[in-house]
Length: 256
Ligand SMILES: [Zn+2]
Ligand SMILES: [Zn+2]
Ligand SMILES: [Zn+2]
Image: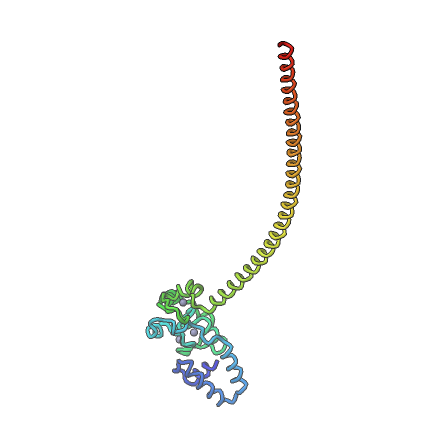
């Protein structure tokens, strides 16, 4: 790394940011342009913030003094400790150092894989530090552990969460579209059924009307017949009355 170039010439410079510029100059002095390009590419490709960003932390000064990684200049992430000197670094940061220049970036003693062990105590303490949510507009504050475990995934101001909302909206739109199609199909079916029912009703009505008219005709006919018979009966009764009267008159004449 560029940083390690500087450490070789100026072991007391802990700052990576200062080291980058000076390292470039030092490397140029060596004339190894290819090496410089490769290092620049590697520098750009690797995660420049292996640690937790210092800006997250509420008490930045105290956090920097106690838990700053001398390689990435951020707060120790997955902290490891060098066995012989006790210096702490992020696990990913020291991995890079072991691959390129296996010396402790702080005190320059020679180091190897077996001398590096996880610092569980430091990890626990760092997870308890108070941090702010760094998403714009969010005022959440809590310990780093809570931020990583839950708030990061649930923050309403997260861009990632925004993507989820877009996905949800897309899914809802798809569901809505499916529902609209179902409604359209049901409406068509309803219309067809209505037409069929209307036709059936009209047919039934016609049949009923015809039957009803026929019944009325029959009743009328019967009534007419009854009236005729009634008239006949009345006439016969009248005739009988007259006959009775005539007979009675004849008897009276004979008697007197
Ligand atoms: Zn680091
Ligand atoms: Zn050391
Ligand atoms: Zn938040």
